[in-house]
Figure 1 (cartoon, rainbow, N blue to C red):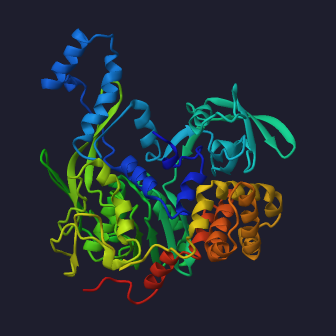
Figure 2 (figure 1 turned 120 degrees about the horizontal axis):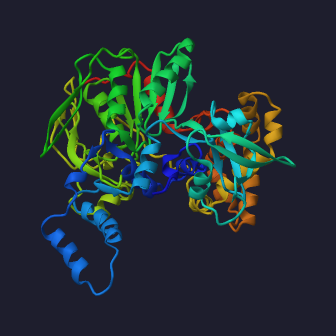
Length: 549
């Protein structure tokens, strides 16, 4: 299992940001949803019931006794289990012990490591951001540092993978890793004591307009409710009067995290969600108390990459008429998995129930046509025109459900938005797509940030950096076009001018992030010219923010 989609501190950062800059995201959306999904954080040991039965057991026995060649039965089992589970539904999965550890680590709130975000765009490991309060900050590492060696592991070579780098940097808490570092023209060694490194589930939280708090969640983890409370408290003195929660491309996580955050916006006794399955009696999740933020105007921003736990939160807000849902139809993942741990600590995440929003609708889309059709659903929506026109939104389930105020809503394939916002296609042309696919975008942005790092540090404030980047926006784009041409992408002047606004926006955003300063820098820069965010803000700051029949 790849670690990149989890975006752990200590893993390369640009991959996650890159897909936000691309118009072609179907594959990554599907990977994120299948990886995170929705499951509880409780484990069930089933070692005593592990033996295979029936025909499957007979076949294994026949292979062991009579097969022509010697067979590694453990390996055969490892290969067979995913195939067996795939016949049930798209989200029941088997994970080895290591795969399970990697996939849940980002949801548990922390892991033991050195606390840096890095990239490998050059032939060395380059620190992009030092995690605040982490071991590397205490050891004095800085953005832009090159990590040449970790103990005996040489980090300067073309063949090393991100997983190998992470293995060298991570380790048990309180163990020491000796790093060889190059900074400027000097090389030195420093020892870092590994410790708990926070894995944030909030990408950005800042006052996007006076009295409006913007919060972007990348997943739903154990610490998400606490992170949100901290974000709110951090800005409370600025007079938070309205909140915009951005769940775009949030593929899910722990259901308990979504329901816990939902309680902050609802009243005591409100039904948040309920689960039900053939062997899983109905379980209602109700709000145990009045939420402290239940009176604040709220908008929830979603898209086709918002899934499972994100859909639970959005569905509760919509069905209870607590907030308007702005964006595009969500993914449509309404199955609940429980993790069952086997004797060797591998895990079966088995679908045990469907969840239903307060109005009684299941938002799970059909998987009757098989895994391939299920995985290609997002692309089919794109080809059908659903990303660009509300009139093209499919309605797989025509059953009418009703919100608290009596508004009609539908299920069977995601949460349809109350206010549709089309995907921004302005400036996306063949030249722009070729630029993104060439891999030059991230490399140029990194080189620019790295070469100007000392200059930017002398500016003294994030605002000064942003002012400078915006003043140089077109020149940065022209420099990038020349760079891309040197790498084999011929310039197309007409297309370049057409794509100028989004290239300028996205280059400034990515350069800001790669400088490793303000954690909100990427979204501060990008949201300024994001039409979906603007549409949500316009509604949120008007008198019409509240759902009406």
